[in-house]
Image 1 (tube, helix red, strand yellow):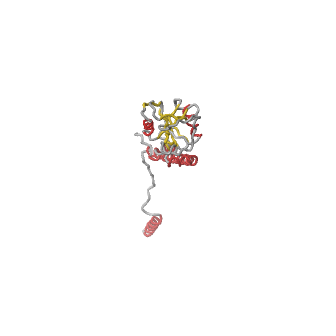
Image 2 (image 1 turned 90 degrees about the vertical axis):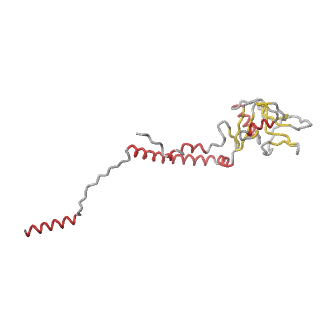
Length: 232
């Protein structure tokens, strides 16, 4: 007998539980708070920092920006444990000569810094920032890099997924409960479906033949016959 495919009710269950946690583009990315991070370990030749930045924008991200001590520590820890990084990582920061201040390429606010005790030169034109991966401190350097041994990129989680992450416990509980309920219902439907399939979808009903006459009619006919016999 040809084995039938599972009912359509069971198919959505396969991806239901994982849908809530799929915040970052793939498993090669690492999530922290409301952002996803990836370290592109490929060494590249570069004529300017824009060539480095293009490595990130090609992945739908931008060069790294850091906004608090926790994020800075997370990046250092991940670089040591998961990513093989050089001693220095180019940050997505540049010196804006228009208002004489450092800015992030991703246009986020400059809310945190971790500059080392380094004296500034007289001219900060074409000055960028580098993260020292052993100390976690930042230092200023020339943006005109000739090559990099890795690029650290960052992408913000979309609003819908960010909201999901903020309510992760509640959403996860609802997803798990829904999955269990649908799995039980799907199992019942599948069991009934296979039972009917194995039986060939045939059901035999047996009913006792009924007389075309009811009991009152039979009694009247019997009395008439008896009356006719008496007169014979």
